[in-house]
Length: 273
Image 1 (tube, rainbow, N blue to C red):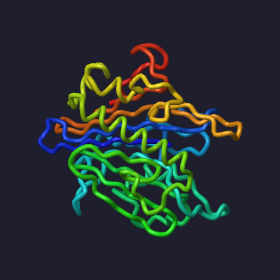
Image 2: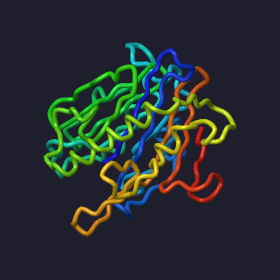
Image 3: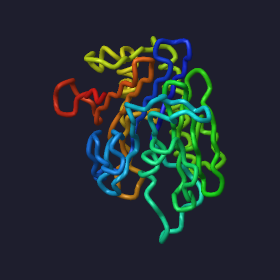
């Protein structure tokens, strides 16, 4: 149950903020953000060691970060969430983790044979705004995110994708999380993170303790940073948090594994770019 919050304020000094929490089964190994892909040398992101792709990647040197107008350079960051719907045929299935890298390279997913991928939502973001590409197994839907604060869940933007979970439990957990954290982010002073030597705490201000869990227990129904057992013997939980900001000075990217500890210690916040 990955979650992404996107704040778009065109008149702000840093117009676009993207906060992403990755959830995965415990034991699925990964490496922190770096230049992991020789075929995509400009991309920086975390590496999924099981399939070789990523859940989020950024191209700091994109010519027009986040521009979505025709003829521009395309998004500067791509964030992947699993979706619901018809699964790809097992024999033809490709890993969704390659989609952020493809989108950064090509500015989208035009020409990709999506029938080979399981359902997903892909957030494309940069200084000019953000949009979400949603695939449920039959039609690729595209939605520009509006000005203000949006939440993208495994059920899509605001939980309104055409293909959604059939589980009442999962639906209720996503709704509780969205309601709690939307209110908390809106009530706090919006940060203006910029590239440079400032710490993650200085850059992200009042939003940092909120996205780090806001003091909720890991099994709270509204938990953003979570740990859950669904009765199949496996543990599902949050593995990392990515914080991205897009402004006129270029992007800023902060990263921390969960639970995030003190800066400068193993497991602490790290400025990627």
